[in-house]
Length: 326
Image (cartoon, rainbow, N blue to C red):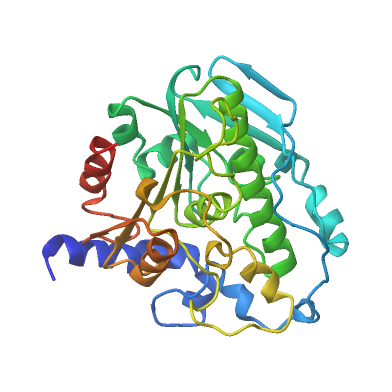
């Protein structure tokens, strides 16, 4: 193992893993490749039985919400409302979570926009831009748009660990669904405001939501010019592909709700040549098989780098190559 790879593995093991999985560390658990973004999801709970019966298409593209756009800030109310009555009050009491605020690095009309979806514990524009490689997109003449995931950053009611992911899989399901439908609405709004191209770029948990959104946004191929809901690119950085083991059988309870949000359970709505997945060999948070599974599902390019989740050495070079070829 090279020095940089060893350094990346050390950073994941000693710095990031304790932040993402504090309960495992407190119990003296060893650092192993993560199977879940939230270790609490494996604990027995009465909410795991039964799975709610929900009618209709839970991921239908929402209508365009009312919005406000001024001074490079786009703001709108979330178009996604809870569909599971048992947890709707617990979700809706988080009033800040109902407002979506997107900060843009430049104008929208006539420009190529990259929407960045940060990872778990993110939601802070300055640090998120670094972790998402915003400078690489901006150097390639893209405007960078920072989107905050549900219950993170300014959308959280209080400081500390985000409300989502949650031990209750019904809440996790609702938050994942909300994030994906908001991403779809954001793509549509950017088109309405004259964006020439729109790309979703997600990191870790943000990549999970971006991938789900890319199964909801209709294809542009064959549609009349001027269609507002087209997605031109999808970039998944050290992505999370599943909250459970990638080959885990159905749970037979409420945890299967979260399985429904896996991109791999749905048909891609973007051509494979427009998809880049970057996975890191030393990643202990979302190990390389997560990236491989998403690249296979979307039939996109898989770039394997030597770094880890916290220190993705080689990521910028992989991004530069992909952007230069577009």
